[in-house]
Image 1 (cartoon, rainbow, N blue to C red):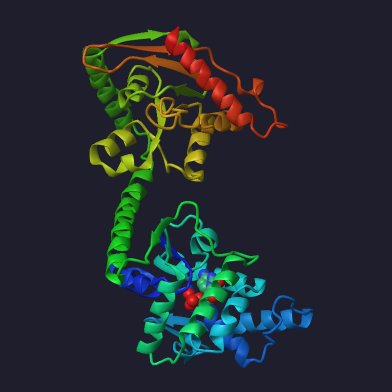
Image 2 (image 1 turned 45 degrees about the horizontal axis):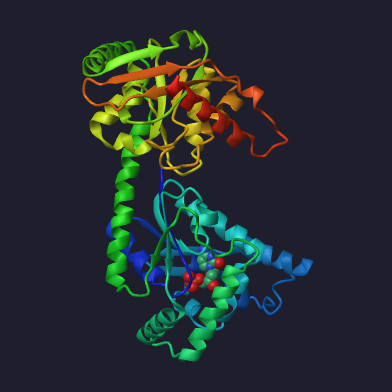
Length: 437
Ligand code: DC
């Protein structure tokens, strides 16, 4: 398992300093992908590739570029980059590389070759990569994505200071022109343009010192690293052994009795539940105790789909394992979770899902999630709607009203791109009706 941190953003946002520092503090492999594109640019310059008309490469040029890329040798060690064995760390930060790197980095063949190399270097490791397209293209499933930004004025100031420290002579006008030019080129590129990934954390560094940025990012990455360890552990589904079955039977018995003592439970429509097949229970979500009610007060095992961070807390993780709760990453297209649900349905198991996505989602006017309908359609499984009514105060009454199984085929309409959403809304309406019935 690797742990990937993607740091993207335009030039001069402090990415380099911050990323290499975080790598050291958090013991991560550091990969400066910009330096890789710079080294390729230097190689092209040395090999006299015509760099002024890169938009339109002739077939011969393409072949030369492809051959050069096949034979290029890039090594990254201790913040230094070696091109065919030669340390070029300083040369790649100067002109003419500065002037051509942006165009070179957008040649399709260059891009593909560097992205492949970045993925290969990162395989099975804990890596922090800085660049432009790491979170959007190289590692769209990175564990952490951060987009660093800063105003142009501030970035010019920083680059000038950096150059002076390195003894590189540059005028303000020259640096500004280069930054604005590269911003435009990177943002408007036809392949993998610079943009913030939807799930990236945006950090504006204009008014922050480098230390402040570092500390902010350190906290974000450290927490994510800790979470990933827990989630990794929690994700490993424990086997269904005789001991596990006994443990579940015992714990379920104790908790169900406690539930009955603390709440006056009324169940309706239990005959509606299909007997031997797999199906999906969809209910309204008022309180964590409603999921517990469905799990504890059903003879068969009901596997709820729950937030993956539940596996971070020891007791919840233990319960999660015992009741085989299926973890899901919120707000992401979690393929692993979808696969687990489909497998469970195929094994004739019962899945529990709250289409509101969160507690009191209807009240909060959240969009109804269409995951349950999607799974039902994919697995050809029925959905049993359940209306729950109660305030879950001690000794108060709580009612579970199980409705008739819904065959999702009656809603299926492949000509309507919104049919999943419409069917999900209809099922939610039925759940609400059952709470009143
Ligand atoms: O980060 P830098 O300034 O050293 O990057 C040099 C150039 O490489 C920059 O103009 C954009 C390009 N680049 C890219 O297209 N994709 C990356 N992942 C990293 C850099």
